[in-house]
Amino acid sequence: MAIIGIDLGTTNSLAAVWRDGRSQLIPNAAGELLTPSVVSVDENGGVLVGRAARDRLISHPERTAARFKRFMGSSKPYTLGSRTFTPEDLSSLVLRSLREDAESFLGEPVEEAVVSVPAYFAEAQRSATKRAAALAGLKVERLVNEPSAAALAGRIGQGEEDQVCLVFDLGGGTLDVSLVERFGSVVSVTAVSGDNRLGGTDFDLAVARGFCEDCGLEFDSLTPRQRELMIRQAETCKMALTNQEMVVMSVDDGTVSAALTLSNEWMIRKCGALFRRMTAPIQRVFLDSGVSPQELDQLVMVGGSSHMPAVRRYIARTLHKEPARDSRPDTAVALGAGICAGMKARAGDLRELVLTDVCPFTLGVARYNESEQSRDLMSPIIERNSVLPSSKMGIYYTVRDNQDKVDVRIFQGEHRYCEDNTLLGQLQIPVPPAPRGQQSIRIRFTYDINGLLEVEAVNQTGRAERLVLQNKDMSAEEAQRRLKELSHLKLHPREQEEYRAMVARGERLYAVTVGRLREQVAELLDWYQRVLSTQEVLKIAKATKRLDRFFDQAEAYLGDAALLPPDPLEDGEEEL
Image (cartoon, rainbow, N blue to C red; front, side, top):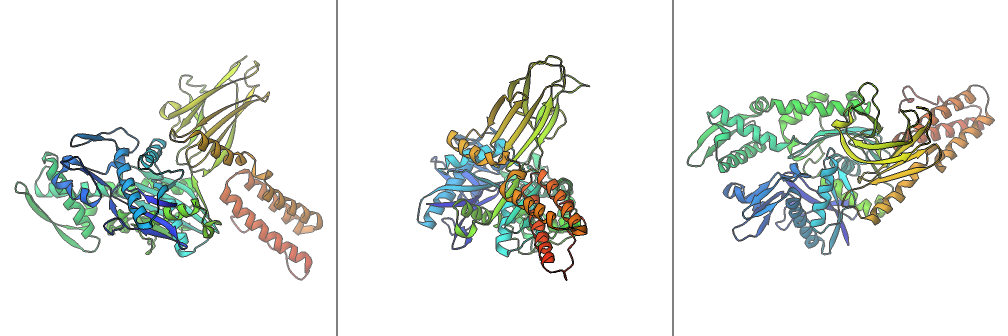
């Protein structure tokens, strides 16, 4: 039974499968790779999905829905004819269409998939995506962030290692920006940011409004049919400007008639506010990752809207770097999802590949605020852009004399005050009465990419209280399986066999050396311990490789006095 990868897009969706050592795109029933993410209900109550539905956007706008991915996780109603749908209902119809097309193409049942989502999707949006898949008859245990999938596709296709790249993913409805490191067989996302309300559809609307403004029309006064016609024409002209310097936009429906010559320069003027909004997520990923634009090896632009020459020029000018020419903007995410499906199926040629992702939002607990006692402060435990899965701990002390219990409230968000963040849950743990500050509790968060959060609070007597927060759609059996997989994270890297062996090797080397080489071994062991204390997989993998290389060279030197000992650390390597 095949597992497929799905790119569920705002404008178009597509699927892929891992076969014959590569990710292969799956055509739909019409033989096309892209299936428009549009749903329509005809006069007989029948449901149309894809191109047939898209063709009815102008002729039957009241019976057709598009761009509903932007409202995933909300209860926004879509009334099509006599039927009402939620965004996840409509998404499930697109997913079902992709599943049926895949079954027809592969000649076997498809019951499981890996689905891509914008990196900046919140938990409610991710849960809604899983529910949509379940309604479509698909089991989805793993969601993959769209930029991660795009980076994965690039690595497999080009076989590149040890690189830092920025993935700029501008789709039909969302913008994701990610810093991705490729190191050996590890593809690791180190920072993500984005804008869930910025995409190609915003450019379509801005072009339509700009056209009306220059032609003396009032866009908001048009009928729904006329507005949709205007937006479709704007989209067509926007796409034409990809290959042409100028294009004539013309609208004539018998009531409204206008024409205007458009250019990329005109579009940049009319869409200036949208271009400026792109800058903030780019700045944030560089700030969060500690990487400078000068350190970028590659700029990868994906998502259908990144085809626009105006967008490519703007980003290239902002980063002083030309985009990779072979990044396959329309299909990269689907190809990467297909690779993830192969990893999920444990394909032999993918077993060595590791994909790590990051937590897009900070997780923490409420902390007592001395200066404003009615407004608790957010105390982060797992900060945004921590590599997942992650297990981190914080220590907290009592704030009142003879306090006999501690209420632990768990929040998600970036704001200083808890009231501005999202409350995820709470637990209570007793503590022995004592003067304030003399009793403490250790709070550990263990979190994975699928939204499973285990919170454990332990007081000084050893008593523990535990709370598991999981997606509503995750079964109890699946949650237990994930908790078992995550349990090894609670063991500090210093205690894991591979790293203990590396430290032991260094200590043996220290014992048999003297002079400057012994000092170098000691310095390097101290550095390695500091890296282990970060508990970050990619940093530890890099440090282990460098340490192993130095030990090889040092041992070779001991066996051949003619060799000079190597310098253990190059400039800047203290900060991995």
